[in-house]
Every structure is written in C-alpha cells, then in structure tokens.
Image (cartoon, rainbow, N blue to C red; front, top):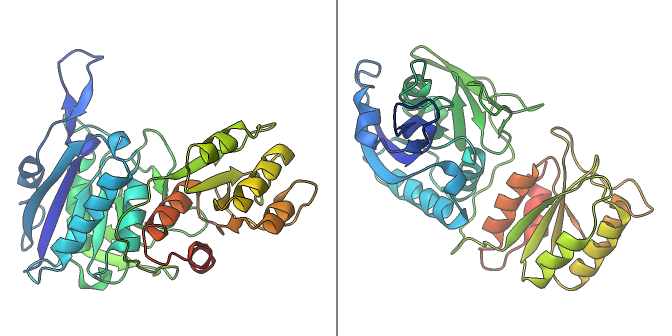
Length: 326
C-alpha cells in the first residue's frame, strides 16, 4: 500500500469566508485532517499521513519559510515509510516554493504541489479533486525522478517550467512552450515527457538578499542603485525581449557588477530565452559588463535559483545558470 505524507501550508484550498457576508475576508483556517477526511472514498488503497506545516495564504510565505518547507519535505522522503509527498499550498507563490523544493530535495520520490483557486466553502470548489489527483500522482511508481511538480485540473507540470497564468481560473497553471509533463486520468497516471534541466544543491541556508526588478519603458536606474546600496547579494533584472534594459539601467548594472554584486538577466516575455544581441546599452553591453544570463527561466525562478546557490559553500552562480537556464 503506497504511503503518502500530506504537508499542508494553508492557501485557498484550506480557506473559507470568516462570515456569511458577501464581502467577507477569506482566510486559511482549515487543518490537514479536514482536507484528508474527504479523500477516503476517492483513494482506496493509499495511506495518507498529515503534517500541518503551517497555515497561511501563500502571499505571506517568504524564502526562509519556503526553505524550511523544502527541508521538511526532504526529511519526510528520507523515511522508508514514506513513498511520496503532496503539498497543499496557495497558488500565488506555489511555483516558487515548488522550484525551491525541486532544487534542494535530494530524494527521487515524487513531490507534488497542489491547491485550489476556489475556497473550500465554495459550492464548486476545485480543491478535493486536486488533492485526490495529487495523491494519486505521488503514489505512482512512474512519477519517481520527475522532481517537484505542480498538479492542477488533472495536469501536472515541472516546477522549473510552470507558472500561474490567470488570477482566478482553475486551469491557471501552464508551462508555456515546454508543455505539461502528463496528466492523471481517473486511476491512471500518464507521463508524456520527463524534465532534463534538473540538479539538486545542498545549501546550508537560503540567501534572502536576492531582489527582482522588472523593466518598463524608460525605467530609471534608481531601484537598482538603491538595492545595491542596501546590501543586495544579487539582483535579477527582467529585461525587454532578449534581455535588453534601458541604457541608464545598463550603466548602473555594469557599475553594480564591478562592485561585486551579481546581476542576473531574464526576460519579461513569457516564452523564449535571453540572449545578448543588441549594443548601444542593450544586452550586449550587459554581457560585456559580466551579467549572468538566465536562459528561459522566469524572473521569479531565477531569483529562487540564485537564493539557493548563494546559500551553498563555494557557490558557483554563473555555472548554475549555465547548466539550468536552458
């Protein structure tokens, strides 16, 4: 009989309205045992043990808490009595927690993140089915080695590639040009591809001083210079297109890199890789200054990778992005 640990962290899947008023606050308040209670008739033959890790909406999760979550997952999977882990999590930052877990969890056993877009007290809540299918995936022997995944609406995705694409629709998670890994079809788990760009690290801590800045037309250098002056350990810049930034930002980035603070370049485009092509203050000048190009990682995922690598002894940030940026 497969034995799955259900690690609960709050989120919409564990939330309900505080009062009956139409505009009542929705807050995370449901414990893991209540989430498990509705699964018995759906998952005969799978044993589920609950770990109430925390109970917050995911917009409150920070890097230390997400790192502690990944460590907890790793500890569960080191137990021979655990065959896989399902994490219930809010959707706002789920992709970041999942990618952090993908980078630091050493076990090859399945790790599946899931949640809901509709609260537990909504008449059409999507939570129970998502949990049931996530448990089904985590219990499947063929899911070993996939790394951390996110399952929603019967589809599961690689943590590296997936992102939340819609504020409220239940099929919000998509992997863009990479596509889903597979789907759960009733009692069947179908895998269509396996992720290639995977590696695990052994950080002793998580580096919280990594900041993310998104470019807009005519953006000034003020934010980058302020972050550098306030002790940023690295700065991720979501540039235009192939990774270009306004000339003032490019100049500031060059000075910040020269001062010993890494600048990592991603694109605000939802698909495609960054590549230094343009001069006159563009990405070519960022490359000459020593910026690190993050391939097709999103800004949020690049920040997670940097935070993990900088928490390792002898951190090789450039090497990590060359290997995992795609």
